[in-house]
Image (tube, rainbow, N blue to C red; front, side, top):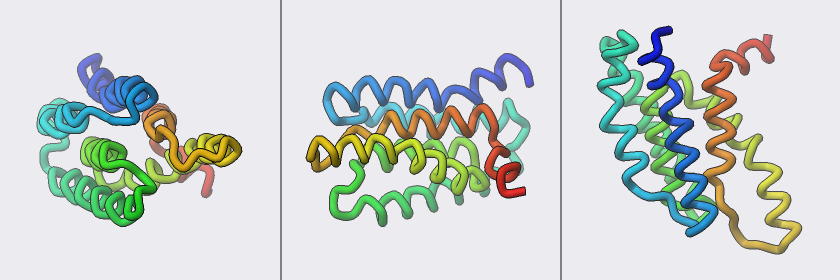
Length: 148
């Protein structure tokens, strides 16, 4: 992997780091973060040589958005969390949807338990998204290796 590919691979994690800062402080994720990822997806695809798989990226992003909107009904997740998740899956492609969702959910569990213990109705979810993206970025095939 070239330096350019490596930087592009880690760009979603960097965006999530910025999202954590904003989400913890203001409980909002700025729209420019997922927009930046979406705009840079074609660059990522050219650098990675995956232009032919554009439909997998698009399908992944749209499916992640649909799932996020379905799960987000009733204010379980904020719009910023949903948009960020969809942009990240768009970035990595359709095959990242299940592993990313799993790692993000696992990372979110301690935050949910802590919020429940404090009798909070909600909590910043960007830290869980960041952890999930980092796990996926470090070992995109970890779920497959665990499952055998």
